[in-house]
Length: 367
Ligand code: SF4
Image (cartoon, rainbow, N blue to C red):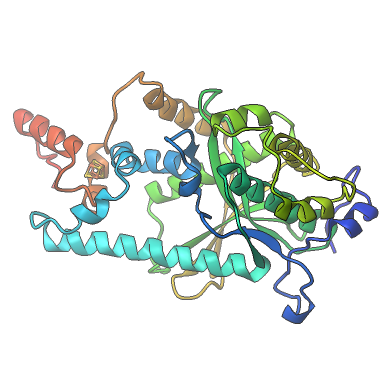
């Protein structure tokens, strides 16, 4: 096993962690424990209350087309309405449907991979704090499984941080963390593609890069102890003094403190932040590609971290959220994105650019 030994985490902690994550190599019948799973509202969307935070996906979508991200952000159901508008040319409708189908296929593959290593048990959550506590417990269970219990990887790890500055909490979920054959800490992102033989467009690759670099930066901030847990809970408008429900206590006790009779959300957050600090900095960023019908990896790509490149893009993103500038759509050379956009008919940016092009009598009309 190439897993390194981490400071301060004893074998005793390992043996009392209790909640191990089942790995693909483990026989199902041997699975002795499980992750808590919230019954009511598992998706990150359900945790959003009044848009108190941004997601990594929001920022990556902003790089793709900010105008499209804004439409989706404020009116998430609109794309399905727009898809059926008669004004949209049939070929554009088909392209939009293909994009929606691709997203749905990717979600299924993600879920399949998640189930390969994580087994969930139902826990009834009553409050938002309960639901968030479950996510925090799952982080600890997953990371301890990787660091102490010899699990080959940890999947679907929620992370959080303030990469845009203190006003904006950003949350995301890392597909996989593991150690490569050289013992380097590796962050993996799974992508599905319809036609694996076609080269990836430069703009698509840039979106992937931004996502992975952002994950690395946020995770490294957590490893360095740069994230303020009280700030995170304040941004989420959650009460740090709320005591966890009794149903979650066995999981908290199993994490190493068998004497606990109660624990608050704030205390749990402190344990999570300490757990992140046992990790190494991410050394390798890997994209793994598979087809839409099969989760087997068919191609890999290594992404080089470029702090300046990421900083420039985050600065540009932040300027929109701080209202230093208006929303922007795609550049003229990227208008092919409009042809696979659900907002093709109604996009104000596209209409504005068409008017400008018409006035200048240019050939750059956004078709
Ligand atoms: Fe962006 Fe083009 Fe869609 Fe408008 S039509 S939201 S500019 S991709």
